[in-house]
Image (cartoon, rainbow, N blue to C red; front, side):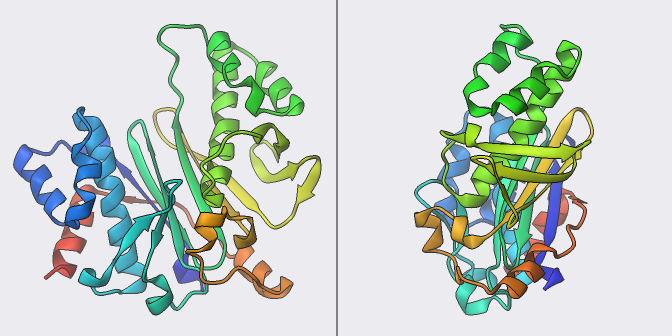
Length: 279
């Protein structure tokens, strides 16, 4: 079961492809994925979208060993990616994955039993407003406890960092459920001890069927992972999940699988893997 727990991350600032190299990497993906990449104007956005797709196909190849021409990755109406043929090939009860990109990094996380969400934030200062003005735009998404911790965390820069950490966890939770909704996030309250032993309360009640982690990357980036029960998935995402019900012992086995570290991957490694598998 542990083989289904993967964490990969790519630093796209280290990849500066020529037009030919970019086109070749794009050609490794199914045609229906191309427009979601080429629709962007800025090259940085195109790179993020392309690497996100490369990570998904490469991880499916690496973990499930599905023939390349049979890999079908789709998205729910809310944008949650899922593997359409996972039921036929997966040795895991609920192999699923999630991707995120922000700043210099693109990440993917997978789980064999629990639903998974991953989020990356780049802690950048707002260009046209103060930090106080910027975070005030998001005040309604935090509980009173969270908001007090954010605004009382120290200097303006420390306030910004604290804000992004909480926001990163909330986004990972939303992305795990596949709801795409941020309304009502003030009901989802995170607790931690120096950003370890993280747990969540919803409407004041501790939720024991979820686990969370957050890690600092280089250059003021953070990445968080949420692992939760499939029954918490949004309705459209539930229809893509193989199993929704588990007895307590079986589910806790999946919930408490080791959370592996993120493994650095290069775009060249992903291209080589997909190029080899597509032949």
